[in-house]
Amino acid sequence: MRPTSRTCRALLLTLGLVAGMGEAGAATPPPQPKDGPGGTAYIAQSVVKRALGRPGAVTFAFYGNGTAPAAGRPVVVFLHAWGATNPQSYGSWIEHLAREGYLVLFPRFQEVNRTRPADASATAASLVKEALDALAGDAEAKPDPARVALIGHLAGVPIAANLAAHAQETGLPVPKLLFGAMPGGIARDEKSRGIALQDLGRIAPATLMITIIGDRDARAADLAARRLMRESTAVAPERKLLMRALSDDHGFPALSATLASPAGTNPAYDAAAIKLPPEPPKDARQKPPPFKWSADMALTGEQTTLVAQINGAGTDSLDYLAYWKTFDMAAAAAFAGQDTAALKANPRFTDMERWSDGWPVRRLSAETPRPPAERPAATAATPKPASAKPASAKQAPARPAGASRPRY
Image 1 (cartoon, one colour):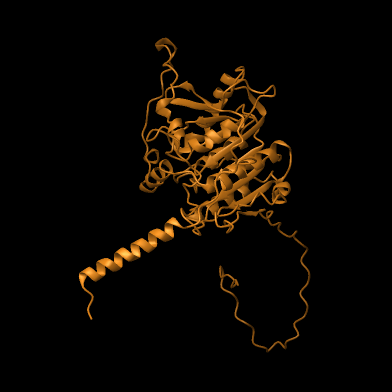
Image 2 (cartoon, one colour):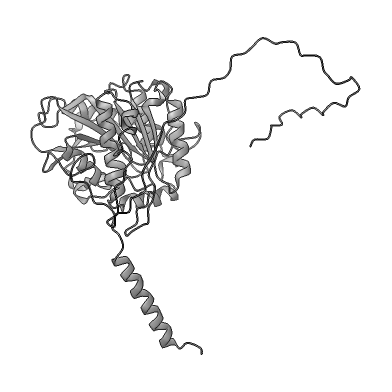
């Protein structure tokens, strides 16, 4: 018998109810821990939000309310993705760091459609230097130059690497930790779009380097992370980690480790709500160089889509346990002078806790990059042994020039 339209509607309604019951009864992801790394045991009740510099060259500063400790506050320099210039896109992570006791600096090194990627690293270094100098005598902010960490997201990662490589010559404190989330935006060569890497061989040997990528759109981020590790030749492999966060749809809402997942919007950190520095007096202004537009200043269609995803990103277990907790533990190890062995030996470092039904969330992976292969030393030529085949034996044809051996 052919089903009637009423029967079809009833079937669809039944399926919808079943699906809704399944969703309502699905396991929920783990909440933010109450204490420990990534947790809510904060030392500050609220966050001071300031803007330093001048219009067009602003660094936002965030720190917990109250007088800073006698030793000062450890510093986090947060370097945003290309196009994601509003700190509210990372407001949840910034608030976590500031309430934990960090002084968070968010240099806005890019004016969208006016800044070339080639200029971004120098601009970021200048902004951070000016902000640290301005806050050095502030009793509440009080940066501790001996405890500095860099966090980068996407194109912010190669900028962080450039800052670490040239910290001394630009007057910046040498960072103890370089933490790169979803590295990307690296220029392939001088003529291509993106952030050109400087001489990463100048990154200090004592630096702890950690990159973390997701399993969604992961290939480019993985290649970028391995290139950063490969080119930072002065840093030993035991001070580096390649990490990966994995998506998990065991319950609802599912955890999706996308390129935008390290972001977490918090409207309380909207740049528009933070009072900007006043314009300098006219007689004190320096005449800016003539503006010259170039195509790499504009966001591509792909970048525009990614920025929209960043600006709309929520906060979930991946933030608490994959990014915030991982950074918290890495910073503690870096400031204590430890290498990555101490982190890998701690089972909590890669643990992602459990869904509400007790099922474990997929753990993080942590891999120490292989040291660069050494070429064998050249040896003196030795005479070839006499051929065992008679002279009349048919010889194999010579391999054509440029031909490669098969790889298995």
